[in-house]
Length: 251
Image 1 (cartoon, helix red, strand yellow):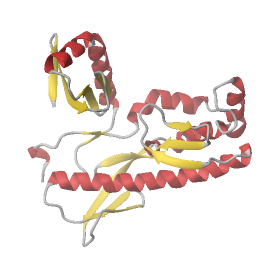
Image 2 (cartoon, one colour):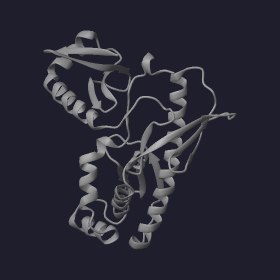
Image 3 (tube, one colour):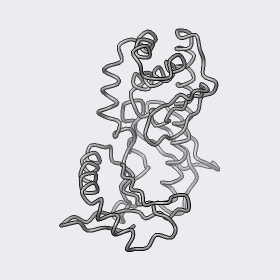
Image 4 (cartoon, helix red, strand yellow):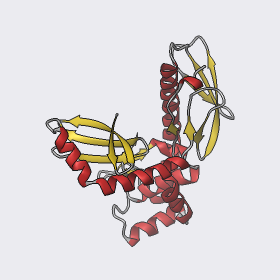
């Protein structure tokens, strides 16, 4: 982790060297500030590019800090902690047991069985991976159900359904009829996830966003304005922000 000082602000960032980029790129989201540079970029090149973008960096960092303050904070994956699930915070109940890998069930909260781990970091990383695997599967199940539901109205089905983690959108529909959805919609209320699925299913009929598309979406979903507005206003809250473990919190 590096940092750049602009005026009286010290802004941390992660430097990533890549042979896939030809010029310096800046990415800032809830996971932090990343500066992606070509393999051959010098320190002077990087500093110069960052100073040229200093207004954008300061403005984006300020916006990011505001959004972080609104996000659910998670310090440790331990009993009593909570994570979002279908629009509500659900409690974790962890139990170390004689299992080889993390297993998750849901009954008025997440019931997590796990092996013993040698360090808090390994513990938290393993629990998080297990929970995310479970959440992906739950979202896949719900997304398939919703696709079948809207298929009855639109008379078309996707060629395939992909559950992934997207960068700039929550869903997409390719000209070939392949629908992709971001699994992190499992953190949103079900009605919002349902709207996104309906939106992409409507693209099977109309690929663009003309008035015909919006008519199609309304015909299979109904009035979607509240769901659309909720997602616009709250998409940065879909998930949680991991807070660093410090010694006072280990035990």
